[in-house]
Structures are given as C-alpha cells and as structure tokens.
Image 1 (tube, rainbow, N blue to C red):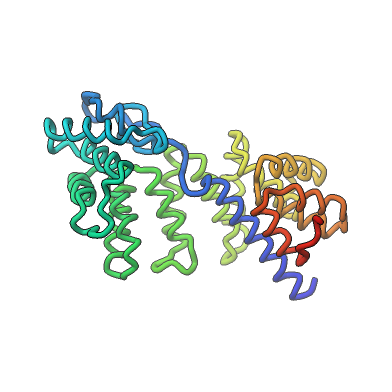
Image 2 (spheres, rainbow, N blue to C red):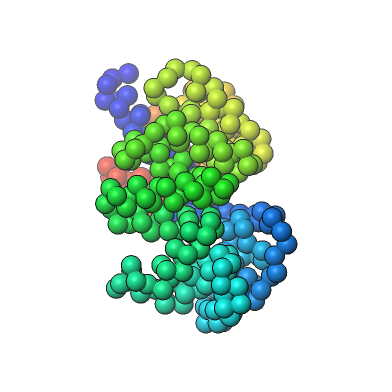
Length: 317
C-alpha cells in the first residue's frame, strides 16, 4: 500500500466517523431525556405544562418541543408562576425558554437582556439546564476568559448528572484542536454518561477508544466492547460502525455480504457514514454499477460530497 493510499484510507475513515457521529447526534440535538425524580414532590404548574424542556432531566411535566410551544401563553403562565415562587429555578429556566421562543431575547444588549438575567439567576441557584445554557452562550464570546468560565458552568451541570452536559464535554475534550483538549477527560465524561445508561454516550465512548491512535490494542478492545454492547441493545449507529470496521477487515462481526446489505439499508435511511463506507468499498472492488447507486440515489448534500470524493460532478448525468 502506498503512502498516498494510506493517507486516503485514513481520510475516508475520518469522514465516515464524522458522518456517523453527526447522524448519532441528529444534527445538533440529543434525544429527549427522561426526568429524574425530584428530591421532594413538586407542584406541577401551568408554566411546567406549557414550557418544560424535553431535554431537561429535572422537568416535572412532559416537555414541549420548540416548534409546539405557545410562547405568549407560556410567558404569561411562567411570569405568574415565578411571581408566586420567585426562587424556584425550574420556573425561572422555563420562563427564559418561553421568552427566547417568543422573540423576547434582546440580542442588541445581551449583557442586559432579561433572558440572561433570569438564566443567570437560575444557574446560580443550581439548576443544571440553566447552567448548561449559560455555559454554551458564554462560549460564543470567543475570549479565553469567557471560554474558561463557560466550561466551568457546563462542568457544574455535568457534575449533577446532566447527560447532555456530560456528552457535550466529551465532544469538546475529544477535539484535538480544542483549547484544553484531553483524551482522558473526554473518556471520563462519556463514561459518566454511559454509566447512566445513555446509549449515545456508549457509542461515542466506544468510537473514541477504538480510534485512539496513540495506543495499540487495549483501547481498541475496550472500544469494541462498548460498541458491541450498544449494538446488542439495538443501536443502529453502533451496528453501522461495526459493519464499517468489518468491511475494512479489522473485525469479523459481519461477513462482507452482511455488512454490505446492512450498510445499504442504513444508507437508504439517510446514513451518510454508511454511504461513504459503501462508496469506498465499491471503489476498491471496481463495482461501477454499485458506485452509481451509492452516489446518484443519495440526498443532494450527500451526493455533492460523494462527487467531490469521486472528482466527477457529471457522474450522475
């Protein structure tokens, strides 16, 4: 194998992994999180019913997705609830959420925004969802000082067991170019989310360990154990990774025909990572007909990416 082909192979694998992780996260959002049992029973208010966040583990009512929130009604209900319980951080967080979706967020003067003041109050009162959101907003500032403060806020949320914060920290520290990037810290945060039974964290942890190029076999074996655990639980992203590594000849969880069949089905369901793996495989076997299917039946954005790899923008004409 030439140096060029080795580099091309590594580049393709990186693209595949990135595409699979994007599909795992569903773009940006994680799956709705189950609510944790409160320390003491909480009174469910109209604010909870109208503005609870589906991803908030401390909600006391079923969450309302962004597209379904009735912002004017939620703002009215949450203002009333906060007036009656001004120090209840859950209600403060939900009022801020209603204001954001009701276009009441003053982006011209963010530091003096009512939303930011309310969120800061909720965060300082120890509400994890608010701590996470404050941290993510501070990250947009870009300065080292704000970045350090932002990470501390996210870590405070993660330390309470907030799965989304834990996974975000795993993602952050796993990036080689991240300020303060740390493989060990990424593993720690993914592990903590995995320990709470989060299948997405299990896949991310397994992938990070398996692709660790700093060590030989121990981390790869650990990573495979996590991926196989998730796959056995029915996680399709984990099964896609295992099929991919099987096609590359690194493991034998799937035969070649089984891997191709499974990845073809996943490609039909929208997995870009599956299409990249199939594209690479059919190129190596010089199967032009199957390459044409992989490229030309792909959604438009995926098709453009595959044509760049093919270096032929007229391929499907």
